[in-house]
Image (cartoon, rainbow, N blue to C red; front, side, top):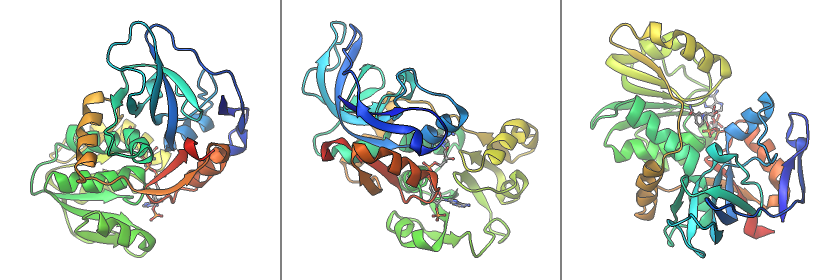
Length: 314
Ligand SMILES: NC(=O)c1ccc[n+]([C@@H]2O[C@H](COP(=O)([O-])OP(=O)(O)OC[C@H]3O[C@@H](n4cnc5c(N)ncnc54)[C@H](OP(=O)(O)O)[C@@H]3O)[C@@H](O)[C@H]2O)c1
């Protein structure tokens, strides 16, 4: 089969498109013929940190068709359309086939395209867990999504609106129209205005991209408000890990998210996608042979929504 294999180094040039052996599913595995896979910041971060998957193939968020099942698989049958985040099972999505346990997979509704399904797993589950699990989102709150234009941000806006809150999206001018089309109530261009100094207060802030001092997020919170540090600059994430608990001693909390693949969360989100209530935003899709280019583009840090590898394009 064709796959994109990590060679060595830390740049996307380390990703080589070549022929490798097709996997054979073990008794507890499903063999998926991958139709689409999305690229995530986690692929790039792992590569930079030298955390290389065993089979040297990155790619976590797959959508495809079951081609074969091991004898202990009862949840899926040959021909089922499935999707999921396989980051806890050794990755392997930048390839024509992958063999994985059934746990991270869910059935893909037939009305949802493979590309749309591949856009969902890590980004949308991260957005959901940030808003609901860490942020305890409640109807009527004022919510800020800082760094709203990318994969996580575009799902966070839509999920937040689904939970019935007022959303302020922080992004550059080029993404204003996009975030408004997703239901955002207010938009602030971070290149022109320091949105945390305007005097406006929020019940929940999701820090998804960019960098702001934790004290600035805290000052922009209402009493009993929470800032959830999802991602952005590494320094922002490290400070939240080290200082978050100390800074949360008062009535305003700084919490950090470590999202985990969760089949129930995936199911919750795909039902909203199926019902047309949430639309995965896909900026670009590349053939498998151009995965290195897709990774390079996402790594520049200004993707609009998701970047997809469409393996059916080969
Ligand atoms: N905690 C977890 O468990 C978890 C899970 C998944 C992802 N993450 C992290 O979450 C972050 C976001 O992931 P993602 O998939 O959304 O990334 P992404 O798709 O690469 O984000 C791209 C977006 O970031 C915006 N952006 C770039 N620089 C910015 C700045 N200085 N201020 C505000 N916005 C800025 C860009 O908007 P403009 O073009 O408008 O600048 C662009 O739309 C990453 O750091 C990732 O590692 C964390």
